[in-house]
Length: 476
Image 1 (spheres, rainbow, N blue to C red):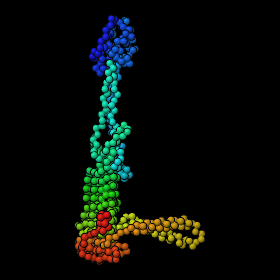
Image 2 (cartoon, rainbow, N blue to C red; image 1 turned 60 degrees about the vertical axis):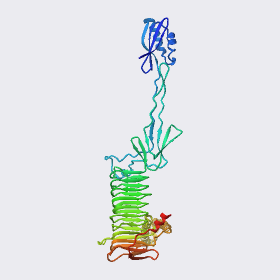
Image 3 (cartoon, rainbow, N blue to C red; image 1 turned 120 degrees about the vertical axis):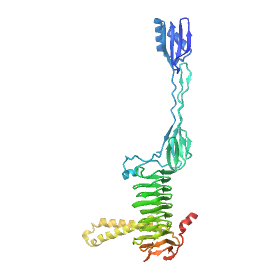
Image 4 (cartoon, rainbow, N blue to C red; image 1 turned 90 degrees about the horizontal axis):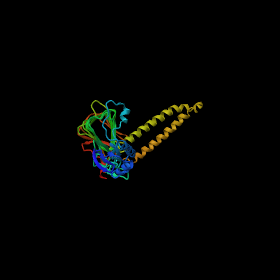
């Protein structure tokens, strides 16, 4: 403690000491003094509201009998309250990586697993609350005590995040682009490309992302990836599906579908090779090695300088090129040379639904026909007749949609099927109601050319593929 003041009168001597932090005042008194005399002496130095009058009265009583007191606490200051630290409050879930190996790997769990929130440009993703200044204190002599202010959040914000002030007690952080929030210690950034290191499996779960996705390993069975932009897989795809709503798909390895995988892109699709998967693209499909038992729909061309096509079906608007088409073993391979509408998945789905309706109508007619001649059965047939009418109406609606699509169909002036080495029997080219096949293997390089204007096929010298429909779109 330290001495802070001393007062002396004819009857007593008062010495005051304060604690180191100046929040407690102690007095020594020699002699005799009344409560009021002590108060008059102390209030010269100490604010009256800090003094404990009950203790001072007790001191006066003790002085009457003993003539002295030592180290009696007569006042207490007000401690300064430190300010609350500022804080960062995230309003979205940042990328948190893959799950625990102990989590369930059921298909439902894979579909529902969530490892981040998708963020749109302009979205508020966090608040930053400013630190509080704290509440000042007062020492035993009435001097103010400065509080320790709170600390500001130690966050480093990347250029992909904007900070804006509000009329409230916090600033907001706004995403400068579509993506996800990456939090690395105190660093915050919005990433427009989601990078997965290693294989994408059930520990990650299926992904849906507003930007592009890159996977450095394989994509394993049961996983679905949907990206607004591009998808790039460094290795292969095994029983998984990829959807690039506004971008292209690149798979640097093989796609093994087991009739369960889909690759769907509004841009291009590029793969090393594939077995038993469905591919749909509005532009170009490029492969390197082989396509075996695949179903491919393209708005442009299917192309490979060194690859082979065996089995499956291909729907192409602008043609196809491969080293070999078909196999000497006689496996059936179908290539459909289409208009821009006929090659679409929606069109083929409508055709299938109409065929299913026709089969249902035929089956019902077989059941109803003979029974209508029996008067007693007419009431029992009413539900079947009602069902028949519903199916007919549904078919009419499908046919109207089909006609609507066909009115906007466009065709290449010629559609080429190029083969650099071999074109085998059991490969059939289909164009409307026309078909083309060969009785024996033809060696390339050659082009089989279909001209929609006169609906003819011809075998000609090799020429490179052209796609007038897509080229005209690009020019516009």
